[in-house]
Amino acid sequence: MSFDVARFRDLYPFESHWLDLDGPRLHYVDEGAGEPIVMVHGNPTWSFYFRELIKELRTTHRVVALDHIGCGLSDKPGDAEYEYTLRRRVEDLETLLDHLNLNRRITLIGHDWGGMIAAACALRRLERVERLVFFNTAGFLLPPGQRLPWQLWLIRHMSPLAALLVRGFNGFAVGATYLATAKGLPREVRAAYRSPYDSWKNRIATLRFVQDIPLVPGDRSYELAKWVDDRLEQLRQRPVFIGWGERDFVFDLRFLAEWRRRLPEAQVHSFADAGHYVLEDASEALIPKVREFVERTERAEVAS
Image 1: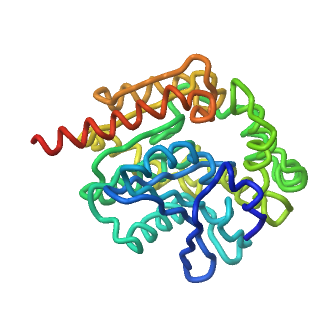
Image 2 (image 1 turned 180 degrees about the horizontal axis):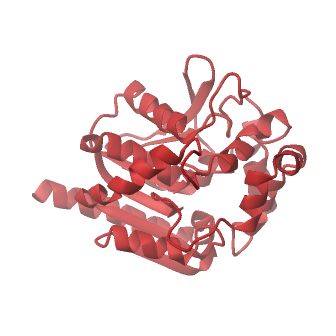
């Protein structure tokens, strides 16, 4: 464990579980009982991002939320011990689902990088996924005309400076707690987001995630991202919910428009006064809508 999570027990009151991935240990929470809901976070967050949604849905469902390797309470190995790529993230998620025997009727929820990971996992075995929920993310390559924001371009391409900023000064995790929300976060919540990333060693994933963004053929994760992009419309076979913070300078409204184009039947709720961390800015309105979507589509399935 890279930090004392007990400090945040009031905010994150969940029992910890670990899965050995032939070396590094993957941390996850497993709360409640019923049909499974699996939550997949992005960068630079961890399962803490879903805390209020977990509390709400565990009363009626089994809720699993993982910490990717290098994030949250999971181990943070070096590059020699772990490959920080999209494909490995998808494989880790599949390993966890198999370990927990979650092979049918899954609701997959993804935010940021977790959306691409969840979409890839769903498309590889669509028969075990019942519905999907996406928050400010992409399941496709950059939309036409879209460019990587200069802040991410800097981190991705200027390796020595990026390492200093992200791993030396924790610039990505700290900066996100201010820039990724429209309404601001309480001090203790900001501390919980950045606490797992408390040293050069423990900040490896926050840098590697950005460096792994697939932009052009030849990038390590481009082939898999393109595979998802080419097949995304298959998700129209399942109910999809999209919750969106409109004040997101990375996943902006052009990404939301692309989701609407690709999955026109999706239920979409966007919030003009919310940022990238939409579950922080709009939780009171958004979480009941997620519950309603899950319960309504469950009823429709039973009726059919």
